[in-house]
Image 1 (cartoon, rainbow, N blue to C red):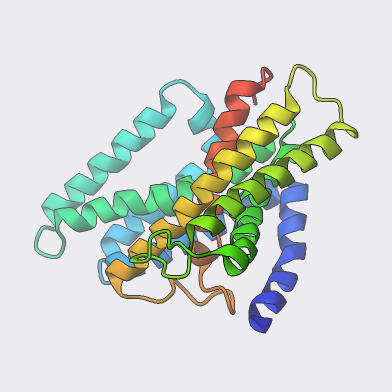
Image 2: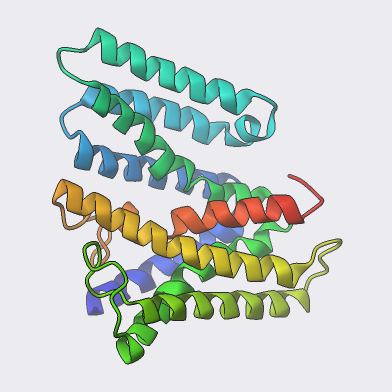
Length: 272
């Protein structure tokens, strides 16, 4: 626990700096963390297939550099995904003697899980009011984690999914959702008194982000646990002392960020 706290205190200023700065610094951090996350995922599921890894990294880097254009322009994302899949299929066929279809699917999924989902932090930051609302992705994830822990320790009796996470309880899960939702609403009330959000129901947006974000944060955590059990590893990596790798630390945020982005997309009239 001491190591976890020290690591968190060291990383917190870096997180605040890149998110507040936005632009180049946040994009660069997102690309680096996304590539590290992909590396952790590939090492867990297809450790020796370096050719497949290189294809994944190349497409991830291209997407990271031009993500605004790919996401916001008509059909660009469809073209990108189709081309990525076709290249992986071609590689699977041509190099059939050293790979297989399952590894090809791993290469495809690894990009979307470790890189694409995480990239929504940058997309949120560049969205209208994003510099204020991006923090909701972290409030939902870490607020849920904290609330679930303390409520679970105090009141937890009924196991949630013991085959995936023996210590998580239904009471803790509910406590995490309530904590994250209340914290998100409190943040919305506070920021609403400082900034004018035109044509935005800020409390509705924050409430939805807290509720659905905290639910998905737990799904993200349990999904990561399921993957680690399947691959018989304790952590995806060792980059962050006490926390593990990028995927271990951000397994919740990579689902709260997309949830927040699409809630913003539907509730905010001013688009990126």
